Length: 409
Image 1 (cartoon, rainbow, N blue to C red):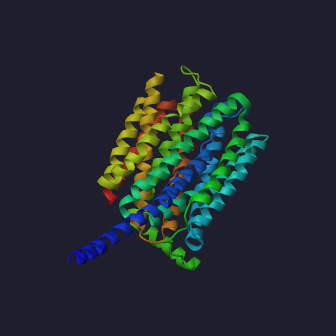
Image 2 (image 1 turned 30 degrees about the vertical axis):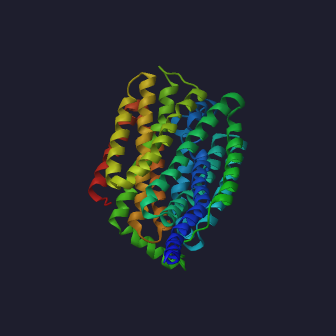
Image 3 (image 1 turned 90 degrees about the vertical axis):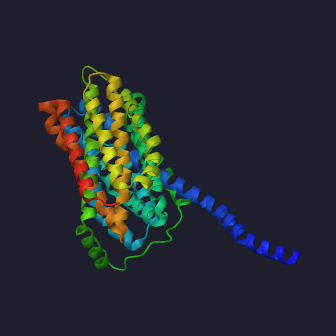
C-alpha cells in the first residue's frame, strides 16, 4: 500500500519537474531574446536623430537656415517612410531575423560614411541612405514581437524594444553633442557607425529565429494583405495616431534646439545634448507603461499619454530652463508610452501579415516625422517656439480624438 502511494506520488511529481526543467531551459533563451530586442532598438536609434543637437552648429558651419539644416533630420525620416512598405512585403516573404540583421549591417555603412561629407548636400544624402535601412529593423521587429510573444506579454515585450529605442535615441544625441564639442562633428558619425556594427553582430548572436512566422508565398498574396490592411478601420486609425505621434516628437526635439541655442538660454552643442537626458526618464517609464498597457488596454493608454505630453509642451513656454527641461521630460514620457500603445495595437488590429501591416504603420509614422521636421520651420520665422508648440498641441489632440473614437482593445 505504501509502495503504491509512493509510485503515485512520484508520477504526480514528474509533470511539475518537467515544467520546472522547461522553465529553466527557456529562461536563458528568454533573456537572450529580451537583450537582443533592446540592442536592436538601441543600435537603430543611435542613428536616426543624431544630428538634432548639432543643428545650431550646422547652421553656422554651413551658413544655412534652420529649415535647411533640419533636412539632416528629415532626410532619414523621409527615407524610412518611403522604404517601409517594400520592407514589410519582403519580410513577409523572406523572414524576420535575416532581414533585421542585414538591415543593421547595412545601416552601419552610411552612418560611417556621413563623416566624409564635404558640404550640407552630401551630409543630407548620407542621412537619407541611413534612413533606407531603418525600416528593415523597425517594421520587422514590431512584427517579430507581435508573433513571438505570448498575447498577455506583448505590451511588456514591446516596451523592452521601445526602451532600447529610447536609450539609443538619447545616447546617439548625447554622444554626438559631446563628440562635436571635443573632436568635431565628423567624429560623431564615426563612433555611431562603429556602435551600429557592434549592435548588428550582437543581434545576430542573441536573437532567436522566428517560430511562428507564416511565409507569404508570393508578392500578389502580400499585396492582397496590404490591401486588406488599408480597408481595416482600426489599422487606419492606428496609422493616423502614429503619424501624429512622431510629428509631435520630431517637431518638439528638433526646433527646441534653436529655441535653447538662442537668447535667453544660449546653450551650446554639449549642453543641448545633455538636455536629451530627459529621454532616460522615458527609459524608466516605458517598461512600466508596457505592463500598464497589458492591464488597461491600448485606448486608455493612448489618452493618458497624450494628456501627459500635451502638459509637457505647455511647460516649455516658460523662459526658465528647469521648466523647459521638465516639460520636455513629460513630452518624451508621454510620446514613448503612446508609441508602445500604437505600435502594439498594429499587431492586435492586423491579425495576419503583420510585417506588411507594421510596414504601413512605419510609413505613416515616419511621414509624420518628416512633416514634423519641416512644417514647424515655416512657422519659426513668424511665430517662433510658440507657433511650434501650438502646432504640436493640435496634432496631439487629434491623436486623442482618433484613438478614443476608433481604437478597440
